[in-house]
Image (cartoon, rainbow, N blue to C red; front, side):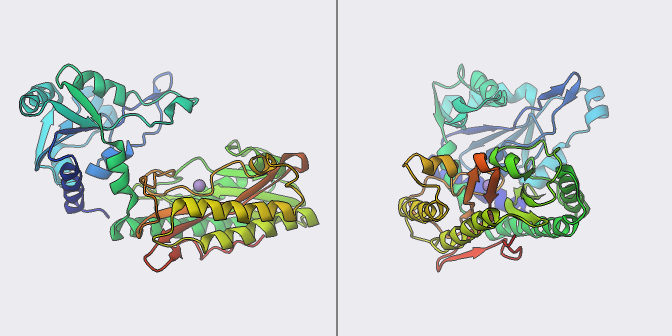
Length: 398
Ligand SMILES: [Mn+2]
């Protein structure tokens, strides 16, 4: 559990980095799923990291050593249907003394703007122009509110990301719990493989295991993909029949206290072909070799270079590297990403691995023309002397 004291320390650190300038961070808005129904809510990760509040429509103001939470205005009817956190509860979780209501929000910002004309806030993700979905409207809404009040809006996304990238002991504990529950789910899946006939049976096994163990459920849409489906990297339908002989790729992780696990295994069903076994063996070997590269102080550029050497060798051993573009063709995604509140967390823009970083290592080889896709993914904690594979309890074998 993250204590109110920790949230206070985080706000203090961020305030110090921007030299006491005002910071306004918004919670995400709840968004429509269909007709009169809202999509399951997931909080904006910077807001969650600074407050611990997992409800939509709140705002956080930090100015020097003072912080305010702005509670969304709710009608009595909205409260009856949706509940909603009280000021007392919000204070207890976040350690913020001042909880204001939406109606005096602008007045407070205007008072602050008299003392400081520039304001820091989190801008939308720099890669968001490549997303094929609508962004949460909260960022835009907040910027519209701030623009007439402050003369300058400054982006502190990178500063927050840098702080968030180094996990504290209490965060690592939550990630470990999420991993332990995920490992249990994968163990149940292995028992189920002999009788399961459809991908969704494996998904259901994981969902049951994650919830019955008390986690918040899946940290992201789980992937259960046989043969050809495993070559579609974001395949989440999980509706196809499983082969009687072949492979199934499973990418899933539970969420505990807002923190994610992210694990992938590729398992045999019946008797896989020699080729399938060879692809798995190459990925497994590369996975182990890549994990061994990680320790504090190693530059991320060097890491990337060595990963390329290892993956090229693996592809060569499988006769898959005949021209340079084959590399991206058969290994089309990143080897690693940070892990935390966001499943794809930032590594904070550091040049070298830092103690306390948690990241995935997930080599994969995908051969659509042979209907074979293999990925193995573990969650790695960087330490000063090397690393700890937090998901090592789950064997990587077929
Ligand atoms: Mn991943």
